[in-house]
Length: 204
Figure 1 (cartoon, rainbow, N blue to C red):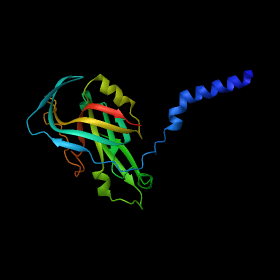
Figure 2 (figure 1 turned 90 degrees about the vertical axis):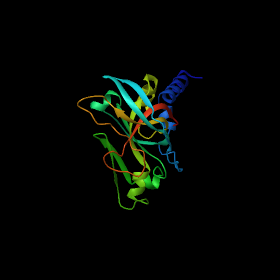
Figure 3 (figure 1 turned 30 degrees about the vertical axis):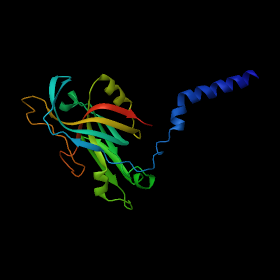
Figure 4 (figure 1 turned 45 degrees about the vertical axis):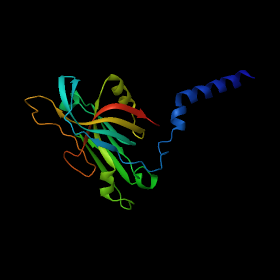
């Protein structure tokens, strides 16, 4: 084998090691239907004490929650709630990830909200979009979970498991509870889920 051939093989191997995942991983791969989130309401009062950047807060457990979906947008915040919840994830399930539907919809995030715009010709209704997508405020259980959240990118197929919670910051300037949504049917203010995230898996 010539010296030039060896150099070419080495370059090909290095290229695969550096960019192989990006070349293989087609973010449009998922074309099936994803089931709606699994939610089991918690009947008994259950409080989780959680240490944030500015001290201890109380999380009031409302429902066990498990979600599969595709990340449509991810945003990091530095507002008051960011002391316990740095990241929001906009996630879609159902049929929304099929190419013939997804290509008509654009997602974005700002001010702890998510927004979507859709073009004419969309095969599903606006109501379907709102019921099969969500903006989730992520409260990481520990540093290991936060590390995994930081790895998440737009287009990733992920699984989240944890507890929907209301948050009591115990702060004179923020006296009201930060409340989670517990239904897929709401829109507007208060429609976001607040998830105390215990497990996260990036499937692809």
